[in-house]
Picture 1 (cartoon, protein in one colour):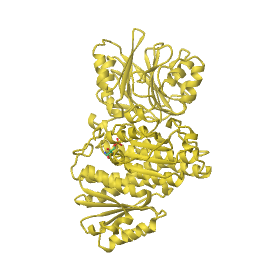
Picture 2 (tube, rainbow, N blue to C red; picture 1 turned 60 degrees about the horizontal axis):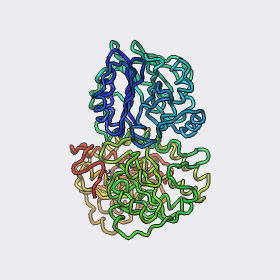
Picture 3 (cartoon, rainbow, N blue to C red; picture 1 turned 60 degrees about the vertical axis):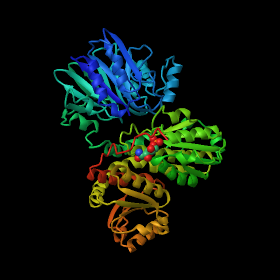
Picture 4 (cartoon, protein in one colour; picture 1 turned 45 degrees about the horizontal axis):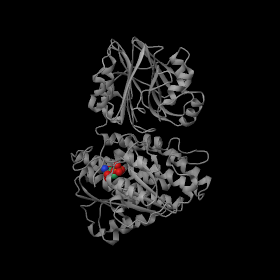
Length: 612
Ligand code: AGP
C-alpha cells in the first residue's frame, strides 16, 4: 500500500505535503515524490528511498504554490526507483497522478496506449492511468478522469491534477482508502489515511468506492463515478491524536496488521486466477509452463515464520501437484550437501527479501543450476532481484516485528503456486481448481466477519493463561506448522516458552511435561485427521492437562474435552491453516499486552535479520 496526500487552498502546499507524507510513511517508504503547479507550470520532484531523501531534495526548492499532490510508495509493480516513484505524468507532462492500489489489467491497457503512440517512462501499473486520462481529456478534468477509470480493473485511490485547470484536484476512490479533509478558511485536503490530515483539520469526509471528489480552494463536491451525480456527504469530526491515527486507532501496528489480513489476502490473490475456470495466472514467476512441467522436485527454503509457511506448502504441493517437496530452514540448507539441478525448483520465502540465511541459500541453489522462484513482500528487495521470478505478496508494509499479514499472504501465494504447478503438470481437474479458488475467494469476507468475535473469545483465554510459563501447541497435517507458528508468535512477543508439536508426537516424549501449569492448545478442525487429533487430546486430558481447543463450528463434542473451546467456520480443509492462524495471532497479541511487553518491537528481535 502507498500513501497519498493532496491539498488546494490558501496555504503553501509543499510543507503540507511533506508533513502529511511523514505521517503516512508507515504505509510505504521505498520511494517518494510530490508535484505542484506554479505559474501554470507543473513542477515534479521524486526520489528513491526514504521520505527524508525527498525532504532533503525540497530543502533547496522555493515555491509559493498552493496546490499539489504527494506520494510515498510501497512498490507493487516496478522496483523502487526515481522513474517508478509517483507522481506519474501523461505524455505532455501537464497531467499528473498519484495512485494507491493495483491495476489488474495494466498490461493490456499499456499495450493499447503504446499502440496509440503514448510513451511510457516507468515500469509501474499506475502510469497507464495518466495516459488514459490524457486520452479522454477535452478541457474538463473531472469528465476525463470519470471516463478513464471506467477502463480500469483493480483497486485505486487516485489524486489527479492538470495544468489546464490549475485551480482544482480530482480524487477517486475504489477499493483503496481515500479521505478528504475540510478546513473552511484554509482549503481542501485528500489523504490515504487520517494521520496526514490531523495537523490541519479534524473535519473529514470518507469517500466510498466509486465516488470521486472535485477539490478547490473555496469548496468541494463529491459525485458518483458512474453517473456523475452529486452525492451528499457527511463531514465527520475525528478525535484521534496523531500517534493513534498512524495505527488507524489500533493500539499497536501488530493488531492493525492482524486486522488488515482480509485486505492483504484479497490483494495477494487479486487478478491471479479466473474464478470461472480456476486457471491460476502467475506470469511473473519467469518460468515457462514447459519448464514447470519438467520440475521433478521442489525445495522450499526460509526462516522463522516464513519456514512455517513452507511447511504448510509442502502438504499442498505434494497433494495437488504430485511433486516431492523438501523444506529447509535456510541456515541449515546452506551448509548441507545439496543435490540440486535445473529440474529442481527452489523457492526462497521471505517477507523482507533481505534475510541473510535465505539469501545465501538462494545463491547457493542458483550456483548449482536450480530454478529459483521467490515468494516475497518487498518489491525490488535482494531476493527478488536475484531470483528467476517472484510471486509477490501484496500485504503492504508490515511494521510489527511479529509477522502476521505477511504470513497469511505467503500462504495464499504458495497456494496459488501449488495450483499453478498442478495445472502446468495437468494433474488437477478444472472442477478441483474452481472449487479451491472459490474457497480462497470467500476467505477475506469470512475473516472480516469472524475476527472481532474470535478476538473477544481469545481475550478471555489470554486473561486466564497470561501468567503461564510454558505452553504447548498441537496440530496435525497442514495445521502442524500452524501449531509451530502459534508457539513462535507467543514466544517472540510475550517471552513465554512455547513449543509447537505434531500431535502424534506427544506420546514420544512431550507428554512427560503435561501438568496443570502448562496449557495445551490444540487445533482440532473436522478434517481427515480429526479423530486422531482428538485421541491425542484425550491423552492430555487423561493426565489432567489444561486444554484449549480451536475447532469447527457445530462441533459440540469439543466442549467435553476442552476447558476452553473456540469454534471457527468450516471451509475446505486445505485452507484451514490460513483461518486457524488468526486465533493464535490474537492470543499471542493479548497475552503479550497483559504482560506489558513491547508488542511491536519485542526485545532482542529485528524485523529483518540481515546477518547470519
Ligand atoms: C516472524 O514473526 C519472525 N519475526 C521471524 O521469524 C521472521 O519470520 C524471520 O526472521 C524470516 O523473515 P523473512 O520472512 O523476512 O525472511
